[in-house]
Image (cartoon, rainbow, N blue to C red; front, side):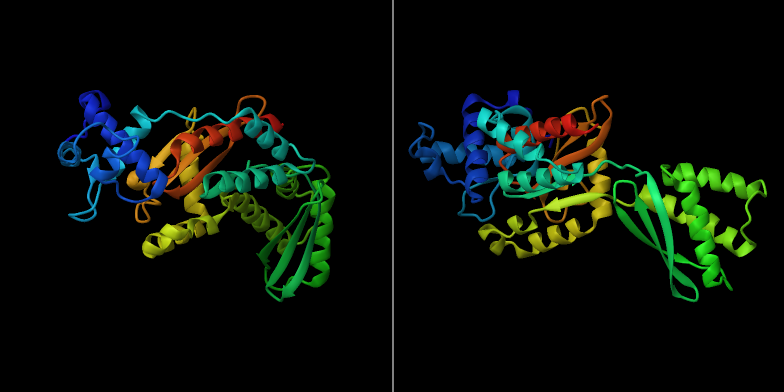
Length: 347
């Protein structure tokens, strides 16, 4: 049976459905007919309310965890609520000022991104996530440190002071002096270039026979460039904060779901792949439960929004991951405003 649209529900069914969803989001518990007919509820008898609840259950919008319990919204019901009923609560001027102030504190952009992730975690009581812009720093120096006869540590130092360490396999019979020679050769050609730019220059020099490196050293440079460049492209750059928020009191009743969610969050490549879908969106995306494959087993929701640089190019994604009873009306505009604020900081 196809899920009905919001216009296909009667006014009475729509109001009862709204109260059930809002009650569930607020408490995480099933909502029964007595609660609906109480203060602030609908002016109907419990019997009439139960009849409407049964109708909403029959069309797949609500579910009853137990025969005598109240109702919970299904994933289809939450989707209908988010798309057709929910009224977002825009951040107050004070909240907007606090977000902008937190993000614009002096320091590198990575510090602002970490602040955004932590802030969204605190505001949503979920896990805040930020996919960092992929950028290639301009490099200053390479040093190869021998670890074993067949392995070395490549230390890449950027002009901004950043340091990255990569393990590299060494060709056979490469002497310690050859490692120094390779380090000097690469460093001399880095000088303010990205790894990709320096790599093209070095490979062209080697191909033209202008390099004084011996065969083993040339092999190390060529293989090393391929590994380092590919690693930079494939490695997810993801900041996740607030996983502990997912272990709230309600989690004690569903430990398996939370364990599954925490396992999913550990798989940063998969989380980055999911956020990459939101990266292509024009505005905030909401994934509820099994609508996203990654969090289908844990029944979790993701609210994510792309953020852009000053030229309008999408450079990353910011969002919140949490249980399906996230306060969508509050979190969606918070994520959207945080994305806009981050965009103002990205050059």
